[in-house]
Image (cartoon, rainbow, N blue to C red; front, side, top):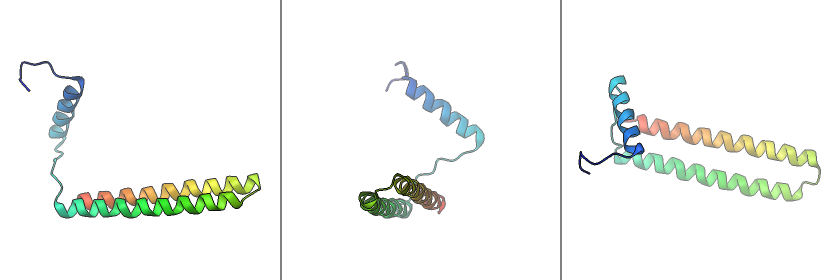
Length: 99
């Protein structure tokens, strides 16, 4: 893209963010192949765990008749999803930080 051409709002925003990062001393290092593999493995593992949990939730939901039991199942399912997503995010960040 030519320097004379007008820039999109996205390009301007990205320039501001890069400038802010440089001023704050944030480095933008590319991920190594080992890091990429670790991140992919963590995401795949937790995707499978979430799918397994969803299957179990739907199975239990079909058996539940009581509205209170349904509410308890939904709350437990929500907590499990949040927990698994948090674990996944922590492992991804750990893999990003490993050099």
